[in-house]
Length: 295
Image (cartoon, rainbow, N blue to C red; front, side, top):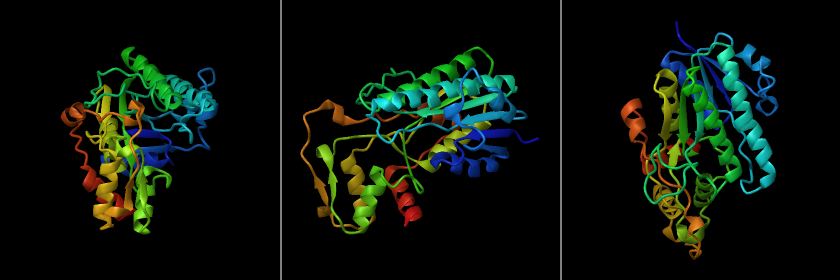
């Protein structure tokens, strides 16, 4: 019998593609929409609703999260903790009570202390430089999930996903912003000398990694990224080349005298490659696929 997989955040950017992809792995998918399970209202002291929703479920894939529009606003900290940490704890306990076998928690690959080399799953976690309110709540959710896994109550895997892009993403991100302007023949301004770096991973690669975690029984943390951290200047130049845009449209502003501008580390994806067979596309291939899917 095909396993029943419950997916939170099933209408979100990653979640809706995951729901479409999971049946290919011979699973029965049970999407949990916001109308059924409002994570903002779910607390460890009131989990009866979640337990009922999880009856008959074999695997919970917890993708749902609160991502603030302004990562620098401390007023978002309470909601981040409520949805991304406390609701995760409640969902873990509900999973135990509903006799769920496996729990896959989708966290962030930006929780690491920034380094100049690719970070492994064993590197220090200390997200104080950027988006601390959101990232701290994801770390707290990880701690709860790992606690339940170490206690033997659930088989737990944690996906640390880097910066995701792809068709259907919010139009306000760096990649869609650059793409829209270049397609219109408008200049794009690359701030801080183009030094900012992030591990940019295509959404379909992320979905593939999560499907592999859902269908397997490996445990612990897995970096799910592209394995490289291109600069904003590299991203802009690659997009301009793929779109056959005039390179002069890329306006590079002076670099700031600040280490904080360097962004996030690349993720070392050695474990995901070896244990999951995970193989993400390159930046150029991923951006070409994005352009083909968003034209």
